[in-house]
Image (tube, rainbow, N blue to C red; front, side, top):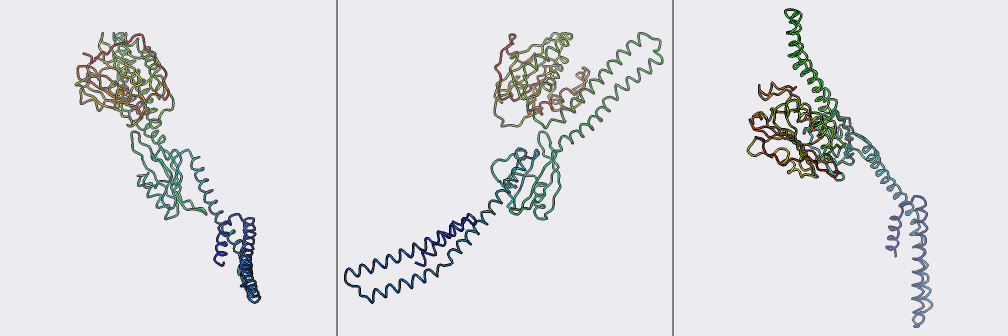
Length: 493
């Protein structure tokens, strides 16, 4: 019987999780259970005595002795379990305290997660065991991890961050640090790892501030000043020389004056284009790390550019031949930036084409990645191929292409790797063509911002072709074929 009552006390203690009300209920339950035990024991003794009386084996002395033993055992049992109610109340209080601790810890976890998820820049909380207890969407994208509460050393490879977290946890003071995330476009972060002590836990909060735009603005300013001062020196010197000539020997020479003024106007236009291209390039580089979140119709962009450059091509005696749909090739991108890409590529093709030659412009959508790469920059056999800008691999979905091919002088193989460098000229012959030397650099940076591919294939004396591959927008409109559709022209001769 004693073991049973002890078991009862254990069960009662286990149920005590409701504070004072729960303790009172447990006390009532303990009293009822104790009374039930005594009644069952008394009933068993009475039944035993009744059975002995029926069979004639019970005498008065045995019955009296049994009743005395029952009474004594009942008294001992009653007073031996008198503290059962107190134990039940104590167990209820302990269970309530433990439940309150668990609730407080869970509330703290939920509050930390809510705060971190509300922060706009990458933020994480690392607990005492080195696990990432909470991380917002920006941090998960930055370090490319999924799953709940992974180890920090598994998802982060930056020694600066790992050392700062360890130092903050051991020294219990904030750690300031910076690091550069290398990639297609470098990103710069200023970070703080601060210890976070609460009644329920002790961990480290890591907050990261993206300095990429600020650093890119600084680099763009420095590059702009350096490039502008270098490239403007020659036309300014030329202008100064002509001005001195007009003030001196050619002051009364009307024919020389008109010729010099034409040259000066050309130099001024070159400086205007140069500054415009430098500003455009600086703006693109400033936001290159941000992927566009809008969509544009690539076919419509190309149609607008072809219409705008039609008079230029006509003046040079060059034909523009467009192959592909007239609209409906929707890509993830910015209309104005894609217009810069098409304008630079088509304008270059016109400039390097001779009279009566044709510039082939191809637009196509709905292609798998490999097919798109082949159509954009791998159509000609036995010529040099190169990818000037590459997109991250492994992306699913469909892709669209823009390909611009000319039948001009072509580009030698050794010059292909440097085509998108600022102010780079392939040779003297091509360098004499009008331009700032920044067009392909602008194309490269726009395509990189759009996470696309920029390809070139060319052979000296056989023309050049530049291709751009872009991811299509999630919902691609139906494509209406253009009336003027040109069959595969093949490699220009």
